[in-house]
Image (cartoon, rainbow, N blue to C red):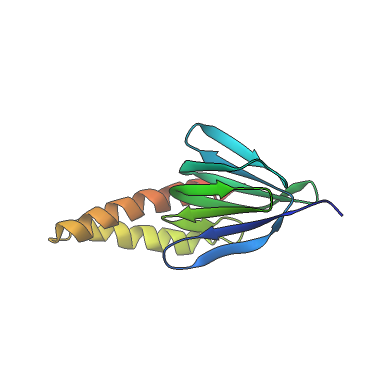
Length: 133
């Protein structure tokens, strides 16, 4: 059995993933970072993109994030993301419905609601674009 590192992906509302992984590839602000067990200590900001989780020498899960920060050390990878969605268990229709809701809220008279709806709609469109992996 291959050596693993502990992976946690957390948003403000929930823990998306908490599991061992052989390797994780994350969208760092300076490019993609491949993190393996016993990785040197790194803290970095993240861009919107897909996190690839590897086990048994293949991608076993993909998660779309909307930016955040990552802390990588010898034993774990902790990712704090503003938004995240699992792409491997994704239902295109559910995401299409969410996108429609966010798009309709973009015209809300409350500027804060409209701004949040624009951000959520943009992220949801990115999720839909990456579902078929």
